[in-house]
Image (cartoon, helix red, strand yellow):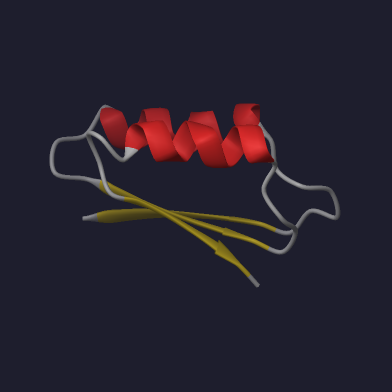
Length: 63
């Protein structure tokens, strides 16, 4: 199961925004994450997702 979250923001998404979605994925067995954003991701947010990859599949997409 993939949990998808989309954001249409003009500023890059940070750790706080990404972490909320990643935590939802961690609370569900066999869930994976797709995060789609109109803006970019901050380096800290990318690092948060990179660390989550050790346990879950996390995909970041920029429109």
